[in-house]
Each structure stands twice: as C-alpha cells, then as structure tokens.
Length: 197
Image (cartoon, rainbow, N blue to C red; front, side, top):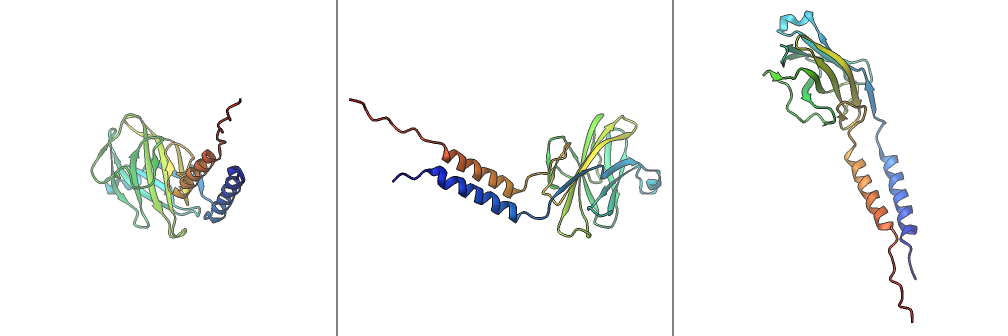
C-alpha cells in the first residue's frame, strides 16, 4: 500500500499553523510618530541641549532622555527617573532588540553629517511585561538635528530600524522553518520507469 505524503503532511502543516495562531499573545502594534527628538532649552541646567521622548506604551505614558549635541557628537546626559530609556546609535535595516549596539552613554559618540538613526528601548508600568522598541530618523546639519520619521513597536521582540516591521518572534521563525521543511518533503519524487521489453 502506497501512502501519499501530501495526504499526511498537508493536514499536519495546517494543524501546526492553527495551533500557532491560537497560541499567540495579544496583537503587537507598530506605530509611527511616537518618538520626538528636538532642541530643548529647558534642560540646559542638566548640561543638555536636546531631549528625546518616547511614548512607552499604548497608554499616554512617556519618558525622556537628555543629550548634549555638538554637531558631530552626541552623549547622554540624563534620563527621567521613571522607567527610563536606553538610546542607541544604529543603522537602517538593523533588527533592534535593545541589546545591540552599545547604548549611548556618558561618553560622546561620533555621529555623521546627514542621516542619523537612533534606536530606543523602554518599558512601562502601565503595560507590565512588555517592552517598547523604537527608532528615530534624524538629519544632522552640523548645527542642528531635524527629525524626519520615527516608529515604535509595542508587545514585540524588537523593530527593524527605518521601517514599520517588527522583529519576528523566535516561534514565528521556527514555524516558518518547519513549514518549509514539510513542503520540501511533500514534493513528488520521480519513480524509476520499469525497463520496457
């Protein structure tokens, strides 16, 4: 008796996908415009001339970091004492998960003229157990930083810098790998033809 692999694998794949879909946590959200970076005269007493603010959750809850900008360098001077935020110099297309690259700390970090991307991670007590990951695209003129765009991923593993795409969960990648393997196994195999007399 010949067993057709497609009769076994297709229902198994459908079952795996359905199980994964039901097991997923609350929907993630990627929203643009939830980060602002702007000149701030009111923080000069901190030794800072720029303030970066991120909305930490889907609730109206914000936190800020304070920077000293010199035209070619940026350094963190302080941050609010609530949940706080960590700011990073990054590149478009990078998957940002809050652990790479090293954060901008009290030592100045060189920034190029032209396009500059900062990534930020934070969390909120209003949305326990979830972290917000975001990015902001700035134009460095040498005398000021001009904000061009930003986005924040809530309830995700991270965000792809310069896009509205969240970093896929490890389980999503595992499911994709399993589905690909099953589909490859499903391909029909060529049977050798019997020799004709």
